[in-house]
Structure formats: C-alpha cells, structure tokens
Length: 517
Image 1 (cartoon, one colour):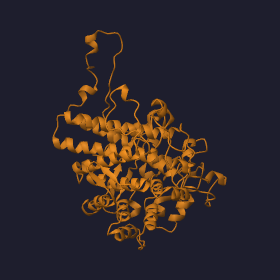
Image 2 (spheres, helix red, strand yellow):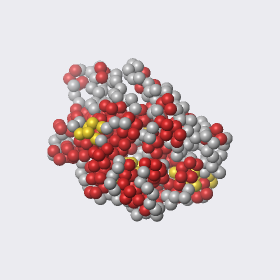
Image 3 (spheres, helix red, strand yellow):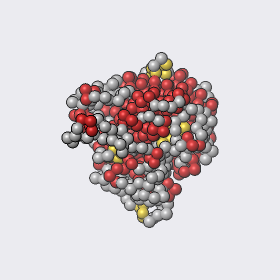
Image 4 (spheres, helix red, strand yellow):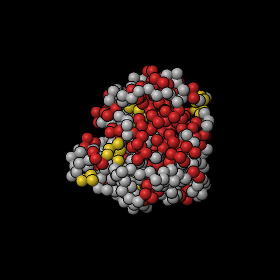
C-alpha cells in the first residue's frame, strides 16, 4: 500500500459552547467522528496510522512556511546555495544559506511544527492501540511502525535543533504545556530505544500492496544513521533500554541487513531516481509523493501529495517539453560540480544550464547547476492539479549504497568490498578504504539527497568550518557579485538552528535558546 492522502480520514472534535441543556451537551454529535468513539476498529486504527505516515510527508506548516527537509538540508550544506527568484523571494532560505538565522525565521518554525505534529500522532496511536478490537499481530506491527516514526521525527528535530523537549506521551492537560528541554543524550537514547523495539515486530519483507510501509531493514538502517551522527557529534554510544548501541552493535544491524534483506544496488545509477525505480530493491526506506488526489490549494499546501523539494530545486524554465517552471532554490555549488566533474554520476546528479531547452529564467545565486535527482522534469509532472503541488518524485530517505558506506565506515571486515561495490556500479576502480575516501564517496554517491550537511557536522566543528565556509568560489556560469556566493559558517551555533522564538514565548520562557542566537 502506497501511503497517500486519499486514505486519510480526518478526525474532527466538535465543542458546543452555546447555551443548551446539560443533557444535550452530554450527547456526542451524530454526524461526525469524535475521538472518544473513533478508535474502535482495525480500519479506524489503520486510518490513524496513515495519519502518522502523512506527517512524514509534510513539507510545510499552515500559516508559517513551506520547509521540505531535503531542500533545506541541502541549502545548509556546501553543495547548494539558497537560490530562488531574487534576494527577497528566498529571504528565509538565504538566512539558512548564510548561517545568519534569526529566531523568527519562518522555515525554522515550520520544521519544528511539522515534527511535533508527527510525534503527537505517533504518541496518540501508541496510547490507544491496545484498546482497539484487532489481532495481537496487527497491534504489534503497527505499534512498531509508530515507534519508528516517532524516532524519525525526534531525530529530525534533534539534528536540526539539538536541545528539544522529548515527548513520549500526549499532553493531556494545560499543566503539561510548559515542557522542559531534554539533553541530547536522553533524546538520542529514546530514539535508539524506539528503533530497537520496532525492529522486533516489523516485517522483513513487504508485499506489493504494502510498498511504502516501514520494514525491519529500514529500522536497522536508520539505527546505523542515528548512531553515526550521535557518535560523531557527541563521541558517545547509545543506550537503548537494556541494549548498548556501540560501533560493533550498529555494524551488526547493518551487516544483518546487507546479508539477509534482499536489498541491493540497481545496476544502472542513472535509473535510481526514475519513476520506474520507486520502491526498488535499492530503496531501503522512502517517503511516497504523487498527484492523487490532484491538489490546487495554495492556502493548504501540505494537503497535497507532491514533492515540494522537486518544485523548489527545479530550474526556472518555461516553453520546454522537458522541464516546467521550477523555482531554482538550492542551486548547486561549484565545489560539488568539481567533485563530480570526472565522475560517471555527474549527469544523474547535476542538471547543467547547457542541458536545458526552452527559456531559462536567471534567478538569485544563479550558478548554472541544479539538482537532477529532485527536479521539475517532465517524468515527474502530476497528471492533474496545480503543477507546483503535484511533483511525483518519491523521497529516497535511505538507499542501499548508503548502508554499504555506513558499514564500511563502522569498520566492517568487508569494508573494502562495500566501497568497491558502490564505485564499481558506476564503472570506477578501487580506492583504499579509509575515512577520507569513504566520506568522498558519500558526497558524490549521495549528492543532493539531504545527507551531506549532517555528514559534515559529525566530522567536527573544525571540519565543518572548513567545508561550509566558502569565499571566492565561482564557476563560469555564476551571475551576480561574488559576495552573493560567499558563506561563513557560524561556529558559535555548532550548526544547529535556533529554537523558534514563538515556541520560547509559548513555553513561558522555560525553553532555553540555543548557543549563538
């Protein structure tokens, strides 16, 4: 089952506050579902589960801003600039790009809201599932899915904000509104615990009608990603309840997946991001996007199914049969182009100005390079609806090549073979398996997939400062003064975003602002 909006049932709670008799007020509305009666059947439980999956797909928050994780992660990295139509068009994105982010940045707030929406839904599901009339098998599997997604949302928040309140239960009264921030250790240990517990009850293999749901292998791969980031930034192992996740244990999960999951590299790298390769053998975990139902509503963008990163990062081309009116955010840097210039993955990763037909609009921070993985190409146009809202590119969160490179980094006895396999797929020869070569391979193999920024941070602040600060970098197609392309990493922030000021205010100043803001 591909998880899409059309399966989602909205749960409406209606409060009657007009002057009525007490017995009328005690009655439940007869024409609407209410929370006290909704969670009764397996079908209703499935609808509630889909609402958690739906939050993973969110790329905006109503009344705040659109903020797709993948695009914003790339803009923070040394692989992409902010871009957009002009300096005013992408002001909030440019603040990310320049590491000059005010606490009132609307994208920051959108990222915060999206993930806490998902956490609330996951917690609610875990609280009500035992009371639903269904099988123990259904309860175990769907609870595992909810735990995976709660871990996913907390991980996205912790990587972006570091000092966050960790929520493992729904807030049930006004006295609980002012939550305190947990330590990174507490948050990451809970993320690991959720993933370890989820692994036990998630299925190893998904039938065709279950594509898009979470497997055991997705949880094991995600645990490897969580460990590498936490260990890299904080220098510690994870404690997942009674299980310590150290390098050996994280590697054990990845090796088990490599040996038994059936996941593998697609033979042709150029097809990895094609429609034909959605839910392919290479994709360990992906978030589905599409055009069903066709979406038109600019006032509620998150209601659509399309991939907003693809819309944002596509070239500003008109009168073309191959591309259609992208917004040119996330223009690709000269540094990434040069890293890929002699690599067979170049054309599959970077779309060059010379590749385009039609009329190209020159936007802000124009470099002549765009993402060719998530873009406004004809293959991913929606069949109906407002074209910006219906890009059909699925987001590949974890690919098998990433798993091989993580296992190599963790010191697998097969590390050389894993690195060689990733390179051989694109016709490249062997290089010695060492940390620098693994990181170089990660940059070119996983370019423009929302991974690079966090890979940089986990190598330390000195490395991040050297990688993310750019002065005088300029390519032959750059348009605009050099100062538009100069970036200075703000080491005082350690690479984390500010806690949204509105959330500090709502907490009655219980939340403490992050360093550097």
